[in-house]
View 1 (cartoon, rainbow, N blue to C red):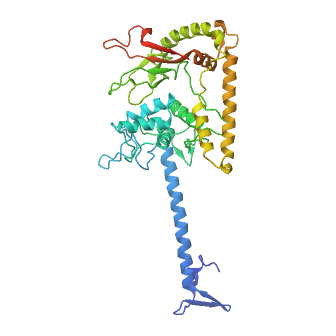
View 2: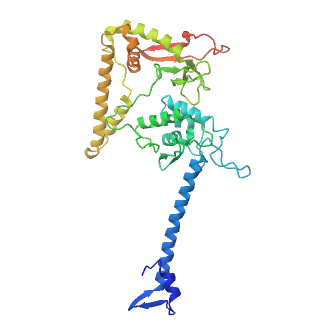
View 3: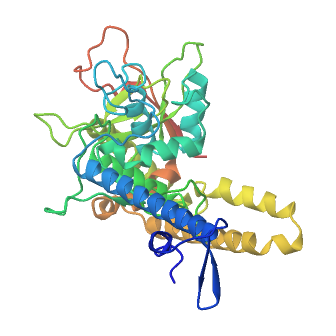
Length: 394
């Protein structure tokens, strides 16, 4: 007899003793125990059905473009029962401007930790009132809600008819292209789990990947003065800024979240600095093989070496593999720079790839400080090359 399904039938069909015992073919069934089993299984089944109903509701709401729900996210308003506003639907006027700054800063190459430090320095708390960390910055920026998408169990929600990702009805600070670039950036820094990304170091033997799209990104430094009177000095990166009359417009801008006061046209800067670089390359051609600019992965490699020296023999195996791989990447970097400049001739420049050009730039330029426009000068004024202060490579 099925303990769960038959309890009611048995209880109704037979006469029971005061002890709730039913005797059938010399077998004794404790009806009290059967009742407990029935209640337990009924409870488990109800919990399962409730979970299924909740998941169906969440997925249906996601397909309809409804609010992501959950806890309040940084940048969005909490719910307002009086007006019917749901959580995470509309932008918080105080926090919202910070999100585009975080997005732009990350896409220009600023690390998650550096963005967190800048936010903490400015006194900007997370949605829960805590301090930012590199992990919380990454988690916020790679979340698909940033561009209006929604993920359930790590997978984007797609329209069952069109098959396209569903776009939600909430305010979104990033474009789809920007969010996809942030996901690629996170993967390039070691994450490999789709939309469920983790903040990690590069895999063993993998050189940190450059995401530069503009020739002088990272070489430029912001020359604006901060409130304390010190020069900003933050790196400047290229960023697309299309306009109605110039869809291909792009600018180099300061990556510091608490600055952002310096910007220059990519076209004008590249045109001027390319002439400078080509002239310097011609002058230093006999010496380019002797003086190589520093490999970008040097700090990471040195940190791993220092960490290795503090570990015991049994703990070093995985670390040794990463160190060996990075050392091999450093050697490839050195040889690549030598190959790019061997037999240098100015006529080679137009046919060189962006990576080859950036390698050549690194041999003759250390940095270029971009001074802000003088007070009263219009942004539409002609490009002034005297506002670029060049520091050559040693």
